[in-house]
Amino acid sequence: RWKQRTQNELTVQAKKRIFFRGMAPLALRSNELIRAERERILALPSPDALTEDDREWLVQMATDYRLEAPDTWEEASEPATWARLTEDLLTRVDEVPVSLVLAQAANESGWGTSRFAREGNALFGRWSFGGSGMLPEQQRKSLGNYGVAAFESPLFSVVSYMRNLNSHPAYARLREIRADARKAGQPLSGYELARGLDRYSERGQEYVDELHAIMRVNRLSPADETYLAP
Image (tube, rainbow, N blue to C red; front, side, top):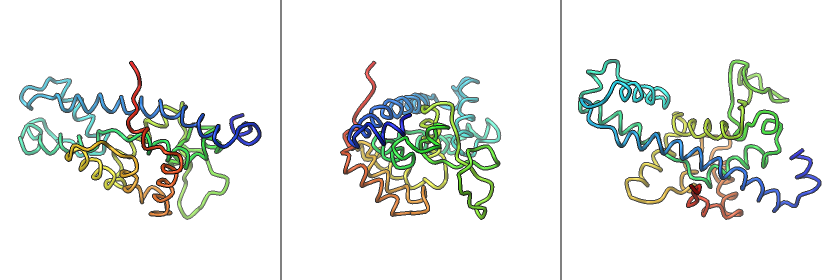
């Protein structure tokens, strides 16, 4: 129905406005969840004062964000290991600017009109291997048994996308740009973080340029300063 409306009933500007207004709260809510995790990391006491729940949570966070968790708690209690683990987590457990979320979702989902978006809430074109994803109409055999990951809701799609950016080795450059901005006390910029996504697509730098163009044409930068009202 959305695809039919965008083709037959809505102007381009109206389509974009509705898409952005629907996506922005999902990005903001996903960032709230990440912010809660980050704040808990920052509030952790010294290793010898951690509760058992804190310890289990910290190991689970390391696993979820593709970091090597300490084999024993004695190892984790060593100052150098503790400092490295928390620093690595803070580099990964961080927000993704709303302008970047909006630009990538628009690009990857055809403004929400793609078959994968309509049938599986797949807003970011993430691949899934092992036969669990939605199959493209023309699957390239040279790339193996792949599909596009489907999700229960658009929010789950955004949450998974952010976790992917925050943990996959391919996006280490994005996380470095973000960490540098944090250390410099600068606000996070979707335009700047997009520079670290040259490995998100086979198109490389051309893909980054495309995201930048979407942000400029649609004036998305102010979205990085938005927040959900209480």
